[in-house]
Image 1: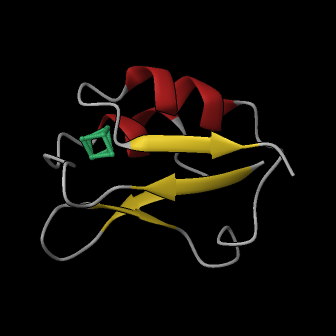
Image 2: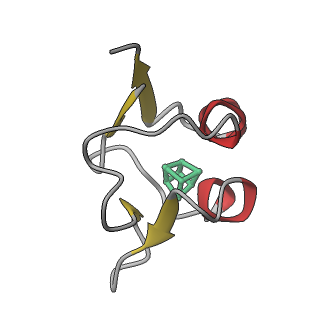
Length: 64
Ligand code: SF4
């Protein structure tokens, strides 16, 4: 699945990086970012958990 992060609504809570540390990190502004190599997608099931954990639904998953 491919992951899209809407950084316009991300509040930098860090839940995604805590939940799926192999997929997400936080940039210098504290906003969510994908780790290198994850831009093209991931099969890490924790990515789905991270999307659910986001308090503002900033993470979208697309099956590819
Ligand atoms: S959980 Fe949501 S609001 Fe928090 S850093 Fe991740 S994308 Fe941003």
